[in-house]
Image (cartoon, rainbow, N blue to C red):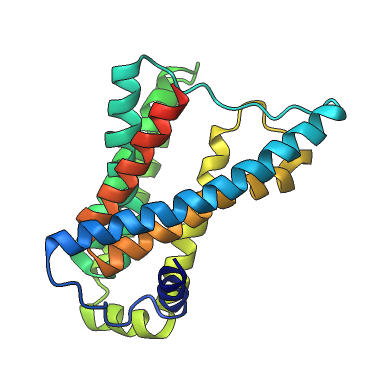
Length: 238
């Protein structure tokens, strides 16, 4: 475990250094299992701390609720252990290569999801057709602009960015991935923000491990780790 911790610390210092040599697929799967055990031990420690925290908060009449993820076993497993990690990997981890084709796939995936959410929002509100059309137009115009800006950046520029400030790009991806999980908290109370953030530390470590897998082993192995972890989490919860 200390060797893995050392490799992760080295990764955080320089995410784009040359990956260590893993010769075949079997070794990669074995390494993923070691990473899984590592993050499992971290989560066990946090589970104990959070259990104590909830006990203390309940003494003061403060309850932190958890979102209900049971939408039916088969659908929940398919959604949270396959589709959600796949789309999250496309958005958060695929562009970490800082290659134009990967960034493009990530951008179009993100734009598609945001567009879908906008359509649902417009359909569920009493907005006029003119307002709805204006919102969709602004979104499409902004999306085209963002894609255009990324496509005028050269591969050489991205390589320079990778060397000069690539680690901040990785850290930003991990932090945004973590903070978006605040949306999983029902009855959000801003006064408990620090407690929420502390409770999201396991998600932060998970995002770090997945980013490590993505850049050291490849996109498929990052997705595999994410999907496997979500699968175990869902099975435990439902």
